[in-house]
Length: 206
Image 1: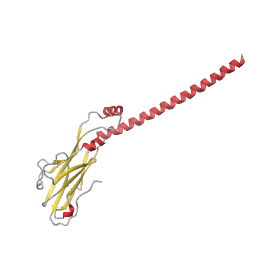
Image 2: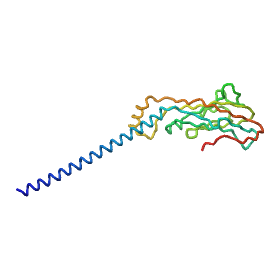
Image 3: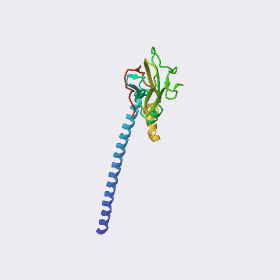
Image 4: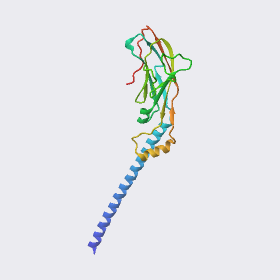
C-alpha cells in the first residue's frame, strides 16, 4: 500500500513539474508575442508618420555660372534632391518638372510648358533624369543670358512592396487615403556667359 502511494506521489510530482514547465513556456511565448507586437506597432507607426510628412525639393546649386565657350564643360547640371519619399516604388515613379520662372527669359529652344522626365520636349538640349528618386537636370546652353527656373516634383504615394499583406492593411489604416504628393516650388538660376572662364557644371549625383 505504501509502495502504491509512493508511486502516485512520484507521478503527482512529475505532473506538477510538467505543468510548471508548460506554464513557463506559455508565459515566455506570450511575453515574446507582446514584444513582437510592440515592435511591429512601433515600426508601422514610424512608417505611417513618414508618409504624413510633406515631400520637399531642393536644387543644388541654387545659382550656377556656366561658360558656354568651354567645350569641356559639356552641359550645365542641377541636382534636384528630394526629401520625404519613403518606398522604392515612390523613388522610381517620382516625376520632376522644370520650367522657366515667370518674368525670366528662356534659353533658345526651351519647350513651352517646360520639361519633365516623361515629357522632355522636342529639344535634345534639355532633359531631366530620375536617379533613385533624385533629379538630374542637364542644360546644353548655347547663348548667354540669365535664366531663372522653377522646379517641383510630383509622386503618387505608394506603400513599400516588401511588406506582407497583413502589415500593409494595418499601415493603410494608420495612414488613411493615399494621395498624390506635390513638393514645394524650388527656384534656381543659371548664368550662361561667353568666355568667362567659369568651369562649373553643377553637382553630380553619385
